[in-house]
Amino acid sequence: MDSKKKLRRVRFSRQFSAPRSKVFALFASHERFGAALTGPAGEKLGVVKRVQTSPDTKHPDGVGSVRRIGFGPTAFEETVVTCQPHSLIEYVISKGSPLKNHRGHIVFRDVAGGTQVDYEISFEPRIPGTGGALALVLHTLISGGLDRIENEFGAL
Image: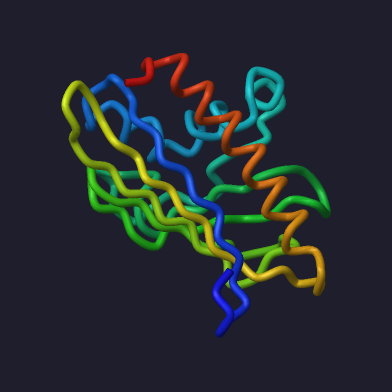
């Protein structure tokens, strides 16, 4: 935890036995990444959907694109703020959520036999005292999604 800003951080580091272009393509696609995070039931229900396309017609899920996660009053939106193909994706929560000052930062790099992905989420809880529980929920959900991606690509 960052004591100055009281930020919570959740970090993941995984290696996939697939080329960086393929791994990046999955993470950069709102629907494909959403399906990996939420599993078959979430994919069927459309838990993650792109609601705004990037102005960059070559990269519809790139900078400026927005994905909605969830349904009704519990849904929130994330906006992509940085997208450097095959290297970096950054996003922020732009609407809703029990988190504030949320930022996702995903770095991709080549390693022998595949791709290294370093993923960090930083946030502050809106309700004091809930940061630990929220970090645990994020960790659990994203770990499960990364496990599903490992099943698709294989782990190093």
